[in-house]
Length: 385
Ligand SMILES: [Zn+2]
Image (cartoon, rainbow, N blue to C red; front, side, top):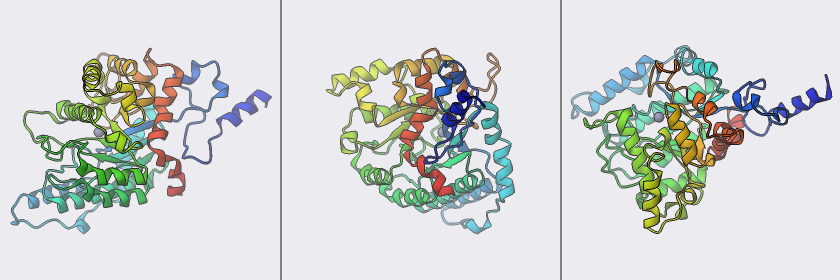
């Protein structure tokens, strides 16, 4: 072996102090375009936004019965948690045929994985119903992670309920972090489409944010299924909530009170990149700093934007330090784009090809930013060992 090859082997060796399952022989655009490839470690591609949308059938049976009982006015008994029948084989097959298969086909390494977002259903039943459902869904994610520790790491659903103080969700967050989870999905509208909860900047959120900071976990701002007939869940409700959250945050002092709080606004930030000038103008007119300064260490956007021009715009408008790679597979937008011949949610292609990104920016988006935002990822290896 030549000296050069020895050097490459040394450079490509995974760090032992951080969770690392990067493909050592990865051949991707960012690497092949670089004249300095031998000075770089192979990139680890972290998808920060995936949901378990291929759950075992019995989970749906349980939820149907739980929902029926919760809305029956006490006439129907709640199903027993012990009645759930979900074998490891069933879970394994549901992942291998779907999320894991797509990881391999698309060349990604690790998915930060949470329960089906549209299934959180915080508006269904009371707080106790939400807690039991959240615990079941989170335990299921923990089982997926234990079966595929190199490919998935957990983010939890919170047991929110309309009118219930967010601080009541801290115990479940803590339980999940002890199981190795590295973040949470936080619902800004537990009503399921009526937007009647206090804003994310309301003081009622502060005890929950204190716990997030103490545990060093970020939250993805993510609504659930929509029961308002005026909105389509993934087509408009999700994006409306993303846009709403950003506007709430940029006019507040939340990050003065919590300088290390990290929030991810998914789906490319809803309308934010396209209307950056509007948001920036409103912020400046209200005596706020430039948006880049407001978001710097606290607000991040993902790449769940399903076409090339959208990713190009996101990359042009939002600093690369504030963009995390994500696809939201499987299921937010299913199917193949007849124009491109590729899956709409194969977002790695758009990041690879965007002329607005250089190699340094791609490394941040694919790996570096996720490690910074999900800082508990570095301890995952120890937790799952
Ligand atoms: Zn999602």
